[in-house]
Structure formats: C-alpha cells, structure tokens
Image (cartoon, rainbow, N blue to C red; front, side):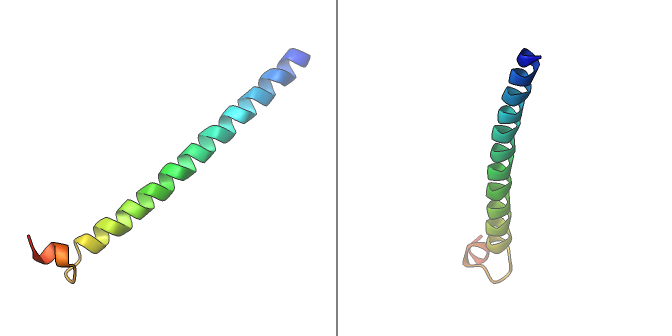
Length: 50
C-alpha cells in the first residue's frame, strides 16, 4: 500500500509540472496571438510597410 501511495504522490507531482508547463505555453500563445493581431491590423506600421 505504501508503494501505491508513493507512486500516486509522484504522479501528482508530475501532473503539477505538466500543468504548469501547459499554462506557461498557453500564456505565450496568447501573447503571440495578440502580437500577430496587432502586426496585421490595418493601423499597424508593420502591416503598411509590406
């Protein structure tokens, strides 16, 4: 039983790390989406130089 508890605790830690990693990636994707939306909007200086 102790072995099972240990494995469950390790699995929970692993899930937490994965969750933090996904949250981090999600934040970066949202920032990228925002940046691209700005870059390709009609009012953007980047867009008008193409």
